Amino acid sequence: MEKVCRHTQDQPKCALNNMNNISEGAADWLNRIYCEDALQGLARIPDGAVDLLIADPPYGLGKDYGNDSDKMAAVAYLAWMEAWITLALPKLKANGSLYIFLTWRYAPEVFVMLKQRLTMMNEIIWDRRVPSMGGSTRRYSSVHDTIGFFVKAKDYYFDLDAIRIAYDAETKKARSRSIFVGAKWLELGYNPKDVWSVSRLHREHRERADHPTQKPLEIIERMIRASCPSGGVVLDPFMGSGTTAVAAQQCGRRFVGFELNPEYCALIEKRLAAQNAGKMLSPLN
Image 1: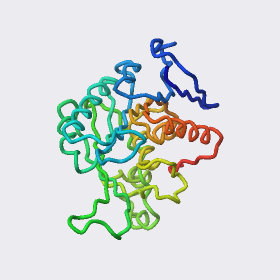
Image 2 (image 1 turned 30 degrees about the horizontal axis):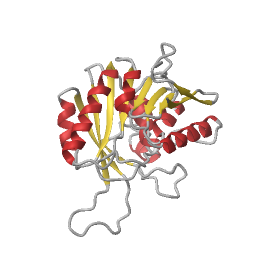
Image 3 (image 1 turned 90 degrees about the vertical axis):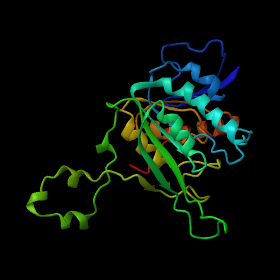
Image 4 (image 1 turned 135 degrees about the vertical axis):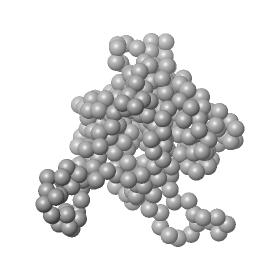
């Protein structure tokens, strides 16, 4: 028996489901967070059913997630990464995409692993806006995370207009000559670059939940709006604080995910309930 949380736009619902009765209906797995290991739980999801896979696995840094999931030696860590990747990628549709969060320690090996199965479109640098203070005295201070953007096919889904960044008034004024009048790029905004400068969630941040590596809604919402169609499905094998589920629901997409720690599963339920009650605002709205 394992705890399963199911959420709708009206209210969250939790139930105890028997693992031997995996599917009560064709889409019974949608809008659910399974409190279990993704290596076992991914079998619940049909192949070719997911539009977007967002993965924020443990980085191999020894952080405490209430278990030993981030305390593997390098060889074991890379073997584990390959194991869940092998199980997760078949869940993507033919035009599906993957975003994966990593650090410089293992990004090269994981990128090579993924390039054998997908096409890499971008290496995105998340500048966490870490203050210029303290840090190591024997190497440069690490102030970014690495994000890999991969796709399955040439006709992958990507909605640039949904994530364009508006030009400021000064820029528009500087391009007021007749040749720029009616230019779509000027009116709608510019394409986000591959360096995303978004503040990490410090202790006083309004989004901050009780999780050591929580990602900002702004980043996850950008991924979802760009790479998952309205009403589509987002899979997150390592839900953590539940930001992917919150962002998917906020953006009008469906979600499914897995989380090992029961306390984090309860946190996700709480965040989704707060959103449904109108207490959580999207940074992109």
